[in-house]
Amino acid sequence: MANNVMKSTFGSPRNIDLSMKSLTDRIAARQRALDEIDGARFGWYHVRYVASHLAVLIIRAIMVAGSGFFTDAYDIFSINLGMSIEVIHALLMI
Image (cartoon, rainbow, N blue to C red; front, side, top):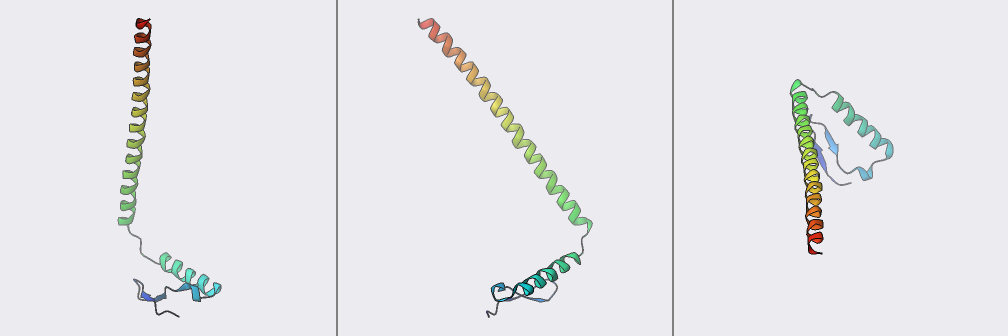
């Protein structure tokens, strides 16, 4: 087995090479990792961080959708104007 051992933030060694473990060992390792995550502290800093990043993503989505709407509206306007000019030009050339 490879000697790929890494220390987690709580000091417990974890084996990175999972190909040598059985299925039950993998399930137990996953359960231990999930238990460690469940026991981690979660403060209001994380809530503010997620909320502020979510607000940025929402604002970005609104900006992208709005710019797409205005671009499509301008495209329809310019095609309509261009076709009108072309039709008038064709009628005057007859």
